[in-house]
Image (tube, rainbow, N blue to C red; front, side, top):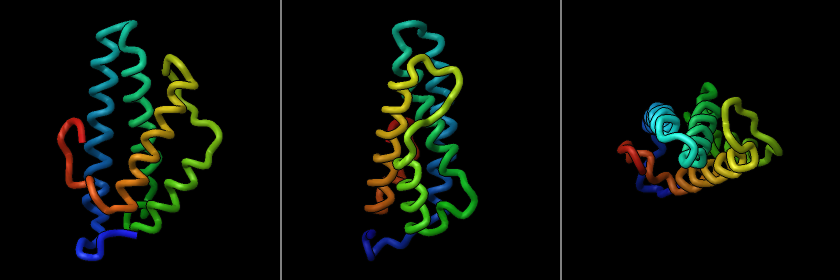
Length: 119
């Protein structure tokens, strides 16, 4: 499931999620200031915020298998609800995309150490 030479670090995953949550809120504010042409950017940032919030479930990140289970359950959902987004279909597409990205990271146990603005 992961690189055997690199142990799972739940604290690092939680730190990455918290950082991405903060950045997604900043991205939403920036897109909101840019106006109409940045609606897709706003929805994309809102989707990232939704995913990071959904993965804040207690004990979800303690083990790689638990995070994989949570991601699989979230990917299997039919709808994702959020208020304030511009286009629900676009928002849901971005949520699924971000969930798949995090699932790949979790499976490979790579990328969580990257906490810069755009990983």
